Image (cartoon, rainbow, N blue to C red):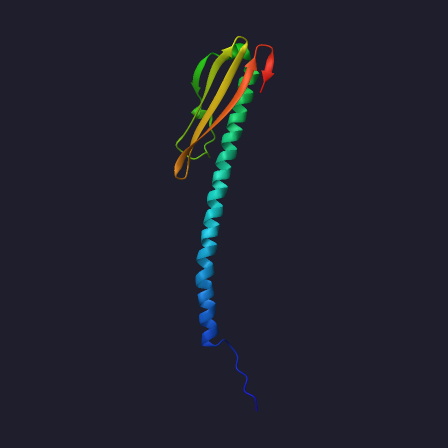
Length: 129
């Protein structure tokens, strides 16, 4: 007569617990890293979009509407971008008939402040980049 046993042995249970003890922390760390990377990508996308929108707004205003100097537009940044954040643009005139616009946006990126610069050129006769 053959005796059939059902269930797991103590050794099988200990091996399963050991595997879970190694896999679960690694998975949770991986999920945490994915969340951080997703938030960083979101912030960078929003910063790029804000700079692009401001560039188009300034280009549409035209050459004569761009006074030389620096203007702060931090209040126009999306609220989703991590604080502290700031944004400004500086208009210079490297030569007659040409204005160079430099847009600078700074924001908090977990452990440090990141700063992105975007440049465009607006001329009396049209728009260049």
